[in-house]
Length: 446
Ligand SMILES: *Cc1c(COP(=O)(O)O)cnc(C)c1O
Image (tube, rainbow, N blue to C red; front, top):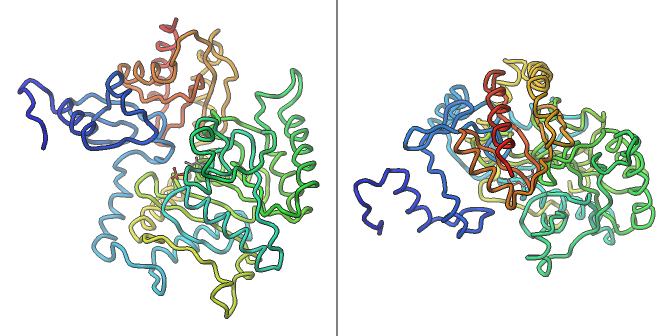
């Protein structure tokens, strides 16, 4: 039962109390919501979210990196309404439908060449699970059953289910859930913040690739795959690196007989300035993972794209040689239609070219932040901006989030790293407002 509330309580307060009573929120210490209240949302439009009192919040993090073309986008809404009238969902084992076929064909045309086969899941973590299982099963089908280990970068993030967690390098998770998983090895990250003074991002990337080679040389016989977040390690605090690392990783993985898995869940769909981040290194990975932005931020959908070579290793009369994996909502037609509508917008609006202009323009607008004495390592890749803030403020991330809300901006720092990852429909005026409000927050820090 909903406890009776006084008449003076706003509908915001009522929704908040009911949420704390009934909903267990993700990635949260629920008790903290007594000090940092939840924000009850009632609607979204473009880059803005609105609460029940009509207060607005600029979604500067694209609602956890998923939204591309704004909330309640009219074109995606129309596609979903149309799909609802035809087929909302049906199982994909033994059945197929136009949206899933068309999406797979279009992605094959757009992705780095050679990635001709799409396997579907519902969220990012399940795409990671699928790629890891497929890779190890490939080697097994090839008579190399010893290749069951995986390698990732230091500070990597590939999702939070147990398999994905085993290739995720986040101290907080490792401490809590380490005993449940077989933690896989890591190699040093090419994150250029760790370069020596005077060392270029490219030289540092190549030095890190040397460390990757040393690991592969020693362990390739038991390694199935190396999994990376191309160009930007998001959860590591938007750690950016030079594409030379990916070129080298591709060459080395090929040489040592280890699969390369490109986790483009966060960086795919134009986020780094090209539709796929791998394009900037001119490589084709053995597996490419997509989720988050693929539906424009509308519905849960993930997919694993892979090569003819991988596909062929499973194609057989024997059931046990097939890929044994399924999810109830595999290839959901509504989610596929949202993804198709998203791809239509990329084509119709020439989004990649337009974003390139926006990125240059926004960098100029962000100059006061870059030059601020408390800001260091200001960086940008495509439609991602990030920097570290120097402050004695304890609990900076939560304080910044709370102050941001007072200033109408949704910021969710990772440690002392503030980042902007706005929907692509943000205009210069709104980006300038974001820069200004962020400056005010930084100025007010102790
Ligand atoms: C978000 C993310 C995932 C996990 O996706 P979920 O949908 O949250 O399970 C995996 N890899 C990367 C790089 C991500 O950013």
